[in-house]
Length: 402
Ligand SMILES: Cc1ncc(COP(=O)(O)O)c(C=O)c1O
Image (cartoon, rainbow, N blue to C red; front, top):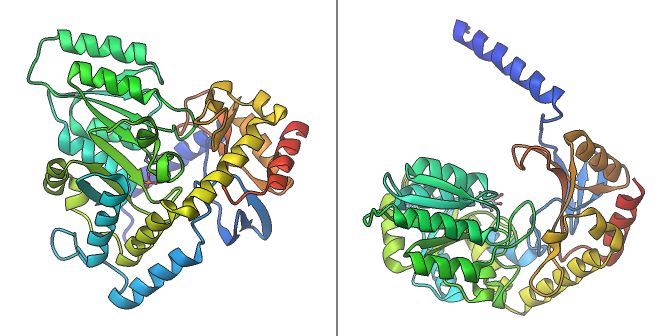
């Protein structure tokens, strides 16, 4: 094989960058999960209680969902075989979109292959040069990248700060360019802090300033709101665009945008991450449909109740609430959330704490920059309806003693 001299340069550069990451405790590698049962995972031969997954309702190994996938696999095969706009749109895709329209009470649904693809696709399709996006400082990387891709002017407002948002909307309005479109974008339950914006106030500001509102419900869909319809539904806000994902509380993979019929049709024509990609495998889509059916019914209610109970156990535990960011515990009913950050600051401190927990049989990932801002390295504790009270109390006890 010919080794080009450019490859040598890339190798040397990679080694330098990796050494730098290692020296700063920022080097990351995936670990391999060799088994899963309920809220436990097997890693390197050890069964650990999993406090790091987004499977908040324990649907990832639900036999009804797996069987729905197996049936579709047997019927239509492995792959969608093309972009959905070509010949990769199967009945399973249409059925899932119909199921979502009925669950969420909207006219327009577009499936995307992931939440990342949805955020980048939607923002770059609908916003462009001359437009303005106002984005919460702690929005997810896919929103940040979507803003960049769009070419619109992006203004960052302080995390959850409606006063700052209002000030910036006033500035944008006073710039006097009536043709420019303005879009406010926020998560509804923030992925790394578990806190929530005041969506009612943000929606009122959007109304007053003629701005659109895009809400990423990745961590709320299925978990909160009536029939698990999310945080917007819980507070009675209908955003211009709602992004939901199937890879978290619904336990599968993929994403969707809920909007009007017209905007959905425009996305079919303009969203590059929808147009220029192979459709989701039909078996995956069938599993999503089954998860959507389960999550909106009694099964979902029961799991949401268990998750709330577990969040109550955690927030009621003095040790854990003392070591967490107090704000993040403000939640729908009382002081409860399913994402609990334990902010430790230094990367080494987060790694040490995660290591101590692992020795005690618990998997809690240390989350470090660039996922969170510098100086806020943390343990991100993700609760699931599948956790037992005993597992939660043991976590609290080990957190206290290490
Ligand atoms: C707020 C938020 N939006 C979008 C995504 C991306 O979703 P997906 O994993 O389906 O690509 C994530 C995933 O981490 C997220 O936390």
